[in-house]
Amino acid sequence: MLSVWWVVKGIIHWDILPIGCIVTVDLYCQQLDRVVAKLHGKQDRIYFPHDNARPHVAKLTHKKLLKLEWITLPHPSYSPDLAPTDYHFFRSLSNYLGEKKFDDENDLRAELANPVSSKHLVSYQR
Image (cartoon, rainbow, N blue to C red):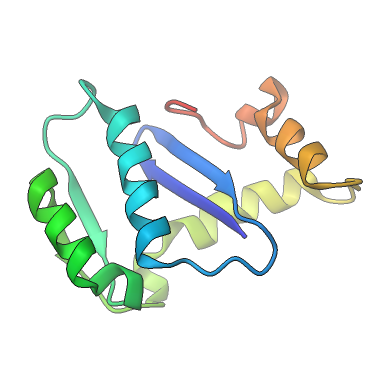
């Protein structure tokens, strides 16, 4: 599973989660910490579209978002009109990767980190 965090200017953070990985509250909060670190000094206010998936509505997540002082914008899970990454980013990435074959996860990571790939992973900060 490819986990992507982005803003209007591009991708803030991406990571490939291991096969069978479940996004838990702890993992989600760790990802929030990585995003916060990468946004430090770059964004004054964060407007955060936030759905009601279980890890997103847990008490620990709620406390973390309050501490971060992000402005959460609630929206329904799996709403196609509010998931531009599904239609723009992932379609572009899918077209770019097309027929490419990878021996393992490390090969895929290397390709995604490749400067040529970066135009498809419009990187704000890796």
